[in-house]
Image 1: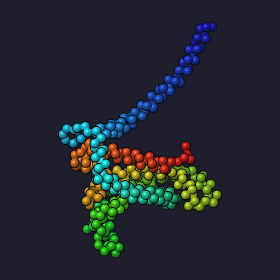
Image 2: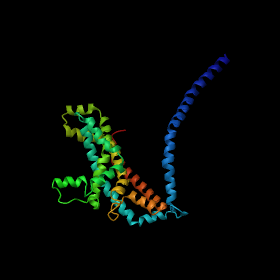
Image 3: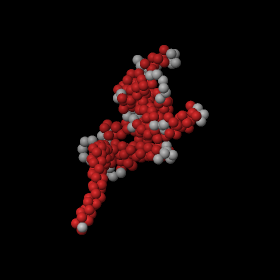
Image 4: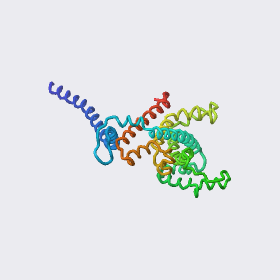
Length: 311
């Protein structure tokens, strides 16, 4: 009898240990699935970030010996007038481009969501510029904005809207607008896709209930669609602002920072310090400061666009 009781006790203990071992095995299996992505993040983000911060604490020329100087590079940034000029220009560029991208992308998303013939074709047309390289598009628009044989001046002259060609990329104010047109055309498709995905998650029953209650199209838009797309707007806005603050290719190709360094963005200035003046330590310090600025802006945007009504 005692043998049978001991045997039953062993069986019960084995049954209790089995779920625990299976749970641990699943945890290790999940970790193995995540491990490649974790290694990728550590290798391509965390390690370079730590190295950049370490380099920023040194006088680190591209060639030659480097010396530890502590936070001197960060103090030099405070007195760098070109840093503040590039930061202000980048901020102005972001304030010009981002609202236009948001409005146009949302309008296009509403358009292609309508049950009209050829909606799929329009979606493809609007999204196609996203997959084209920014360098290729920048070179294309350099030709289109050319005052001698560019298409924009030719059209405006034919329509008698201007009397002489406009030198689009020679004036900083006009250059921001010209490059803004190119950037909106290039990137609006990605934000449109975000809004389309967000709209697809809204149940049709909500719109049907709103119609039954007598809500018109504008009322459904402002009191149903926009509130439910708050998180989508937050994502699209954060990505657009980050992309604008990291702008480099279009200004490097289209204006080369001119005229008189008035169209130099913050990343452009980091590039100049690191690879033109060979001040790797100072360029790394500028990069760390830019990262801090983006983190602050992202946190503020996510806080202002937080959704307290959804879990």
